[in-house]
Image (cartoon, rainbow, N blue to C red; front, side, top):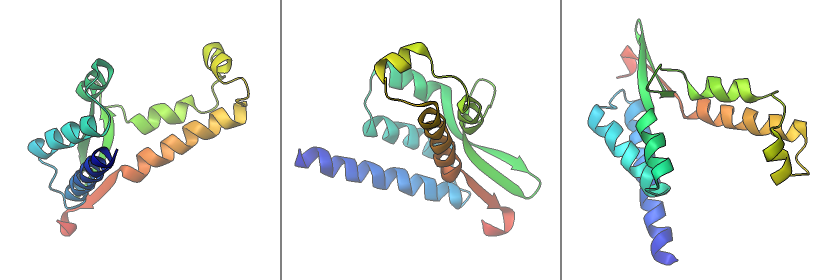
Length: 131
């Protein structure tokens, strides 16, 4: 267990370093690949995780003198926070309600609100004069 914990700390430090690289406006394609690889080490190399990594990126969107970095779908560049924001307020699917019978609509909504907040927290805005 100690080895796993030590590895997890190293992986988290690497992910933090890469997020800071984005803050500095220096998230190169190579560093994006490092981010993906570190995220897989944080989780695992299951087929589902590999598929998710292949579909999602932490990517820049340039507007005049500002660059925003955020998690988005590679296919159409939709922000993940937009998706989770739209899930808030949707009825709880029957199979979720069956798995979590005590889950209220309010708790369901709060879950997606919280995920949206976390995704937007991880986003980065860099102005040209901050580079």
